[in-house]
Every structure is written in C-alpha cells, then in structure tokens.
Length: 395
Image (cartoon, rainbow, N blue to C red):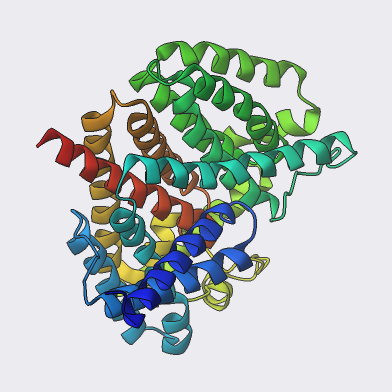
C-alpha cells in the first residue's frame, strides 16, 4: 500500500540525491552554491532518516579520531582568548559530515562512477575556462591565473583535479576511452595549474605525481622530468624566479613565512595545552611579532604550526593522529581494490590528493580553506565507500 509518508520519504530522497550532485558539481566552481547544496543535503539526509525511521550513517575506522579532533576544537573554544570567534570558526568540524554522507550513500560501483563523473567533469570545464582566459589575454607578466577564485585556491583545486584524474590515465585495466579522456583532461588542468604560478601547489602536485608513478607506473616520471626541464629552460622570468625562490631563504615571501612561524611558536609557548582557540590570529601576530611585522596575515601559512597555536598540544596530537590514520586507511583501501580500474584509480588519486594536501600545508593554511578541505573529505568518503564495497565482494 502506497502511504503518503512513503511518498514524502521517496521525494525527499530524490531531492537529497540531486542536492548531492549539485554539491559535487559546484565543488570546483562556487563556494556559495556548494555551501547551499551542502545545507540542503544535510537537511534532506536527516529527514530521510527520520521519516524512514532508519539510522543510515555507517561507522568508519576514523570515528574516534574525528571525535578527538572535535573534542580538541571544543576545549580550545572553552579556553580561547576569544570564545565567540572560536565557536564560530570551529564550525569547520561540521564539514566532516561530508565523509559520512558519501561513505554511507555511495552504495554501488555505478553510484561511485556517477559521483566521480559529476565531480571531475566540472573540474575539467573550469580548467578549460582557465586556458581560454590565457588565450584571450588573461594573466601576463607578474600576474597569476584566477578561475572563479583567488589564484591560490585555484592552484590547489587544479592540483587536486590533476591528481584525481592521472590514475585513470595510467591504469592498464581502464577502458581505452577512459584513459584517452583522462589523458586529454590532464592538458587543460595542467596548463591552468601552471598558470597560477603557485609554488606550494607545484610541490604538492609533484609529490602526488611521484607517488602515483612509484605505485602504478614509474614511466610517468619521464614526462614529468621533461616538463620540469622545459619549464626551467623556457618559462618566462617571472615563473622561473618563483621556482628558484623555493630554496631562497632570503626571498621576501620566505622571510615572511619564517617570521610567522617563529611568532606562532611564541604564541604557543604562552598557550601550550589548548591553544588560543580557532580564531583569526591577526591581532596576536601583531602583538608577538614586533614592530617589523606588516600585519597582513591572520593565519600562519603552515597547517602544523597553525593547529599547534590554535588548538594547543592536545589538538595538534589529535589532528596528527587523524591525518596518519587517514593516510593508512586510504593506502589499505587502495591495496585492496587496486586491480579494479575504477576503484583502484580513484583510491590512488584520493591518497595522492591527501599527500598533496599535506605538502601544500607546509606553506599554506590549507586546512582553513573550505573549498580545498571539502574535496579532501569528499574523496575520503567515496574511497571509504569503495573500500567497504570491495570488502563485501571479497566476503
């Protein structure tokens, strides 16, 4: 018998599915649309569970680590120098729900493929827009490519897209059409990443590519080496200058980062246990850095030091344990599904993204960039779902 409650539940589930597609499609495009879709997803998912009288959130191997991170945020807020601001910014822990949604709701290979296509299709289109901006007289000397976002966010998004796509291009069991499409997609994504001229994203992408090469096909290192040599030899002076500045400790940007990190450690020394709270550090940096500080930053351009300052030693240990556990789990899942061209490619790409995220976090506050963190949580959630499906098939 078709009951009104059943029809409402079915319609809510349909809205949830489409909201999730809008969420995935906007991840590389618009933080506003992405946030609205995320809110709709959260509301519909709760309604589906309430109306269906069924708890559909699956447990993961990361549950206690996420809980420790949440407790660290709460303690830091309670003892913060600005509890109200810390309470507002600590809402970033709510984004972890994305992991559980995709880990729970991607329940088949077909749904996984659909989700990945909806995620990566717009990413490639964004990269193509970036190429057209270059061709139509976009960034010139001393300027950096921005596609819908600040160039630094653009660089991290293109880095993530590149590392997610590359494994599909090199998996020997992938259909030829998939390999060719992935290879073609790498061209605009790579060009757009290059045009951002962002050192941290370059290093993060290189780390992820080297990982994929070592795990899947070492021959990838040959075109990577050729590309690096070509950039060094033929890139404009502005690009080569940026690359050379990576190892120049006296470069103004490097000196400013060293100043920020040293100042952060001074703040941590005064608030060692629970930190100053998840707040903008602009005021404290001015107080601790001295008169020579320009006062332009509200964060520390380093994930580890920023977490140490804002969440204290307890929070830093919780985040470190969480990151280690994520890396271990993604690697285990890849090892389990590596022969499957879809699950194996996505799991490896997700792990490479996580490694790239860590490398980028050495010089940027990437954990505080919602568009970047959302993608880390999405890829983690889908990977957990694929791993769970592989486990069922094995049993």
